[in-house]
Image (cartoon, rainbow, N blue to C red; front, side):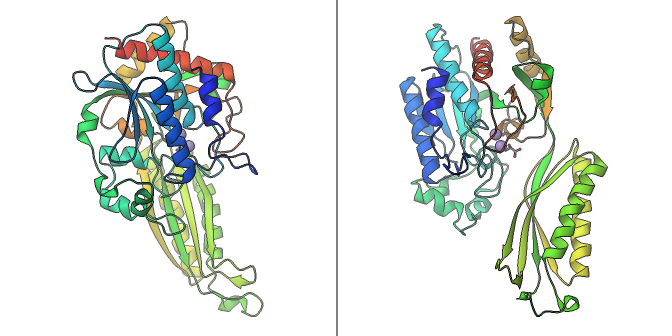
Length: 404
Ligand code: HGY
Ligand code: MN
Ligand code: MN
């Protein structure tokens, strides 16, 4: 099947009609529909499919064992009202590239595996790249089983509800031993390729980044009768903390965002009891990231004390700086150049499963041009011709890496 046909089949799954965004959260009905699409597509290509102990999906061209596989793919889950391309572009392109190699009569000397990692966005259970972190042992399985979504459903319960055994979660060295290298294709989540007038780029590294939950606990009371000096309003230190995040990012040349907040109990005419806020921070190096988070935390504590509010901080996930394997990167750049597809090398502030796997196996990424740079939003887009260029580039790279 062509890229366009595969893309069209996946496109309606998990799409919210009102916003036009995707709500593909792990272990939900939308996720199950995406998983069924993955299995159907892989089977149609004659690939053997498998779900690993951590819920990640695999499709194998050739048998793992004698030679370590070249793995590609990405993820199918989304942020709330995410775009169509972040994740799925890498999975669809992987299947399309394999179809193209098959049609060209290519016979891999080493296996090729397509992966779809679970909960890459951490949109339901809070930990980004949860599936690849569990696979590599970067997350403790007992802790992961206890993660809870906004309705207090644990990951263990959600997996059981989807027919999976959460008792099997954890580092999987046998599977990792079958993987020789990772090449994840992804839409660019910025506009560097558009500025460079290039359809496809190669990743150099990923900025260190992480997310932290801040819980401000005050005293709920009446909005119309409580005198201002008597209030312990958690909204006030929260608001100061949002502004501090912006200031710290500006001062240190970093990025900091509070994109999610929940005030409880949430009455318009009452002072809140608690405010939960999530800080996402990213920086060019680990020390700068620590500086930003330290600045924000200092303000949160000072402002909480000033307003008689308690504040607590929980680190939900942190990924240190990733520098992708330079030999693999150079080889990919050379192979694409030789094929008449020159690809510039880019760094990114967005996190990826390839960045987690890079700690265990040589990894690299291909980026596909995003004309506006918008991502994590319904307007995220890539032109069909650029998607085809991505498939061609991925097929070229896979033929090189799996051909000997
Ligand atoms: O949030 C990220 O950086 C990625 O898009 N998951
Ligand atoms: Mn994303
Ligand atoms: Mn992604």
